[in-house]
Every structure is written in structure tokens, then in C-alpha cells.
Amino acid sequence: MKGNSKIIDALNRLLAGELAAMDQYFIHSEMYDDWGLTRLYERIAHEFEDEKGHAKAIIQRILFLEGTPDLVSREPIHVGKDVPEMLRNDLNTEYSVVKNLREVINLCEDEKDYQTREMLRRQLEDTEEDHAYWLEKQLGLIDKVGLQNYLQSQM
Image 1 (cartoon, rainbow, N blue to C red):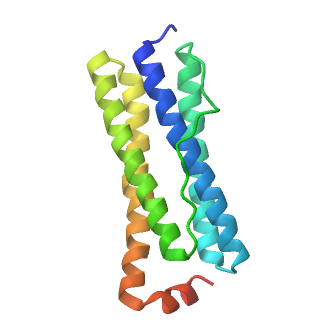
Image 2: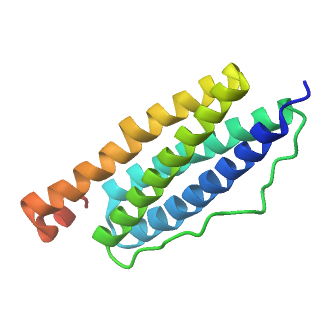
Image 3: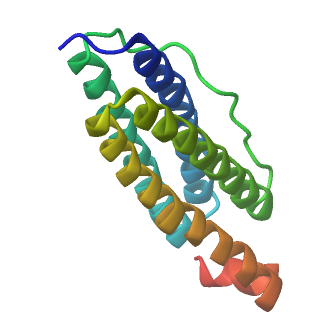
């Protein structure tokens, strides 16, 4: 099905963000594993898999619309040096993804591409209600119980 070039271009921009988020979660999960923070490793490795699923869905939609997925372009990643910075960087990445998803959902509405809109709406729900919410909770826990207690709970 020949798709709208505006939608395909917007999906490729979203793909660049999802691929960057995937890369950032991957390196952060490996750092957590190296530091012995098993619970953080497991959760962030799960987030990596979620981002991979989001990227796959976008790629499949671009292909369905007879576009060419751009797997080369990436948003910059921000690798943290310690747990709070890593969590903040991941949260900022999720906030950026949310903003971009909302913009493209609006474009889909304007262009009457309701199938793409629905796919992105599900990704937005996952990003806001799962990824960003969990990261906000972790940063809140660090504030409440202190970094050392938080880190001990993640071993």
C-alpha cells in the first residue's frame, strides 16, 4: 500500500529515537550487570526488549507503507556515569519519545492514517505508563531512601 510520504518521514524520525533508546538501554543494562545490580539489569534489559519491539513495529509499518526504514540515523545517546544519572538520562529519553510520538499521532490524525495512529497510540501508552512511570518511581525512591539503600535493594 503506497503510503503518505509525510507519515513515512515522521515514522523514520520516530525510528531514530527508538533505536537510540534501544542502544542506551542496552549499554545501561550491561553496566548494571557489571556492577552487580541484578534487579536494575533485569528491568533495563526488559526495557531494551520493549524498545526493540517498538522499533520493529515502526519498521514493519514503514515497509507496509512502501517506504524504506532508515536504520542508520539515530538520536544521540546519553550514557550515565552512575545510577541516578543513568536513570535520569533514560527518563529524559522517554520524555523525548513521548513528545515525538504525540506529534506524529497528530500528523496521522491530520493525514487520516488511523492505523498508524493506533499503533503509535499503543506505543505512547507503553512509554508513558510503563517506561517513564517506572523511571520516575526509581528516582523518587532514591530521594526517599537514599542512594546507598536504593543500590542495596537492587543487588
